[in-house]
Length: 288
Image (cartoon, rainbow, N blue to C red; front, top):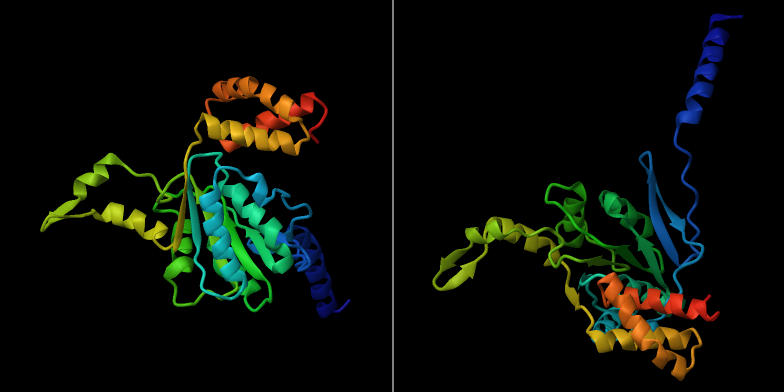
């Protein structure tokens, strides 16, 4: 065996040992899907099609009519190529923020709307995601659910740049919709208010507060969600129970158990209403 043959044999053996350690190639994107998740493994990212997107409908969401109207109007403008804003949905937990975004996909997928869910840990990949979908005929909403940051996080800076701070323009077929329980996406502390200054009778926030506002301020449309009162909670319960096929008399009989359920959960949220309705109707053999 010549010196070259020995070298090639050793190289092939080395490659055979290294190959199992290398990341698998990124699968081709299934552009026939309507919903995707961005997945990053060992530095390689790709769009993973969601086989069964959430089937919730806009009409299933009760007592958030004003928020529905605004975000649906913005989404229709986006689909028609008109001016539209990135959207921040903030407020009480379980009030329909995430469900509203999923319901929009269900309503408008046939008109070319697509949804890409991006985890907070993958926000640094936003430029790669945008590059991948730029020029596509579909209209993409990048969906970031339950966002909350510390100022030092890399995802915080990446999101700021994509929203309104990068030299590269975001293509017109991309919007970002985010949900958070925090109005400014970051924790706020009482001590930060001590840095506020009074100038000619006006209040000027301190630098820490200004930094926190600067991220949420990059969203053109803010939608606030508030805790439901008792009657609103019962209306939501009734809506779900009717959808599960219960009769009006059965729905009326469910009022007291629904209130007990809410009391035990410490919440009159839409999520609690859905969970109660699913349990209550399931006991009667109607929920699936």
